[in-house]
Length: 220
Image (cartoon, rainbow, N blue to C red):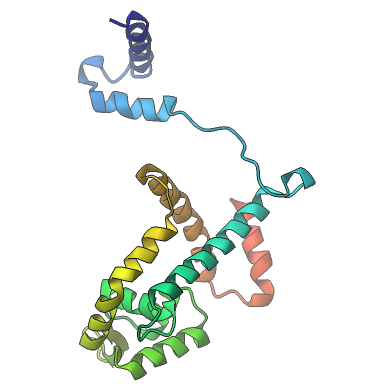
């Protein structure tokens, strides 16, 4: 028996119980202990990575911004390959269709906002999808005064015919990250997306956008 390991486990148990004097040790469970371990003894990689230009003073924000920009370009190149030879003109075509399939009917404005597009660009994509017969505009089922977009049967069939390659492109974008690393990345990207989405939904004028976003960072 590894008595040193057993001793270390017992010391952890003692520390765990010491942190819960008021709860009554009899009511503590292995789940409580696991959660406590994650909060207090989860190893963190504190090693600072190297990056291009670091020795010349290039900062963290510049590196992150560049990598996000590059990832967008990589993703677009895989998407372009996925729709090669299909009826789709761009990756935005199938992304708009996927959103309509997943979330159901919505207005033009809602669909454009969900894809974080400028209105002129979004309208152009929507008009193209309608012209193709993949999307139709109808009266809302909940509010007859409102016009909404919905994916057609032809749109569903066209999307499904290409979904194999689209899923493959999505898988490639995640690279060789493990499931755990993907979950960690999703957590960080969700937080980053929430930050920017709050600013995006304010419809801040372009001339004031930079200062407004920068003020939000400093207010946190």
